[in-house]
Length: 150
Image 1 (cartoon, one colour):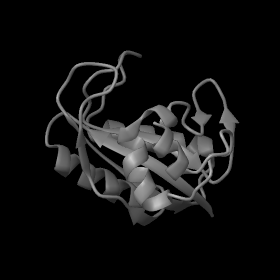
Image 2 (cartoon, helix red, strand yellow):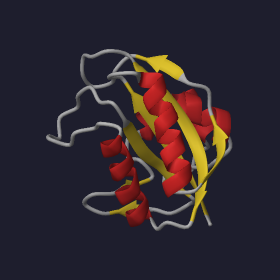
Image 3 (cartoon, one colour):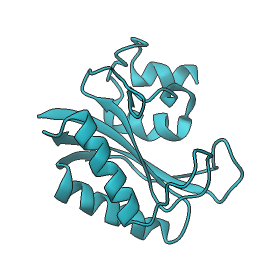
């Protein structure tokens, strides 16, 4: 079993309901949720839009990183996300893999740890609630230290 940290966000439609549905589907299709942060309302990042609801969760799963990404993409699509472009825009559901244990993955479609997490307080703040002492395997700083530097 691997311990995995995910970031979940929604800024389109019924945000709370969509987050609740994402958590249900993650439990059913990916694995046990072991920790859930509070939900934060934040401004969009990288584009102008409605505010996001963001949270982070810790899960235990036997899925490989590739299969995890496939499952996450399916969950996002079930909740209404359309993947029609690479530009940032409003979405019903956005789930990112932040950490997958201490693994480092660098593939065309999947980079772990998330390459921009240290720049995103909307990830670092909820992540610090559930993984404050977790050390980024590339930057070699804890989530707490990354948040202090942001």
